[in-house]
Length: 185
Image 1: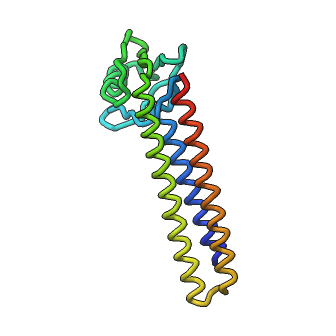
Image 2: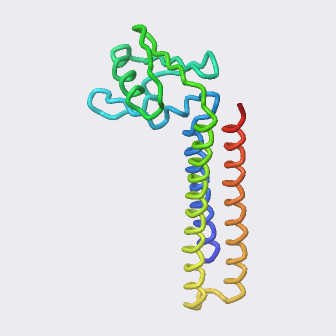
Image 3: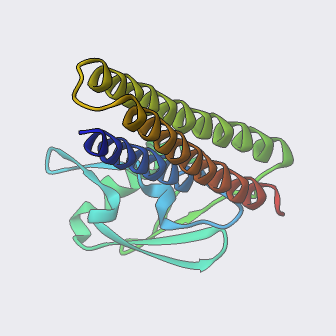
């Protein structure tokens, strides 16, 4: 019973780390990746569709992305979605492809993005701690109901604390990597 609770908590903590990793991928650094377009939705035949499902991305230079829509009729919609997004780029359309040149990040903008990354990391840590709290409550309930002994409960809490520390450390490591990416010129 306690093992099931621990397993469920670890799965949820793993998901929290995955969400943090995705959030960090959406924060742009000096070099552009297609992941920065992850939250851009295109109105494609009336349905909001992620741009990654409608186009391929080519990165010829660190700050330039060439977007090639699979369906040429969606070129205007993709361009409009990229322009209206919060990426801060003005895409240019030559009839078959869309070029997006990202401006160089200023020092102030880099520091702002580091703050955003720290906020995302803290959200992930809080999520992991909440998962820990819920799992600890469940373990306490199991012990209180007599379904497991106190020794098992203490062992379960110790394992839960170790898992919590391990996942928080993963988030901290992801943050450290992202900060170094952001602050390197």
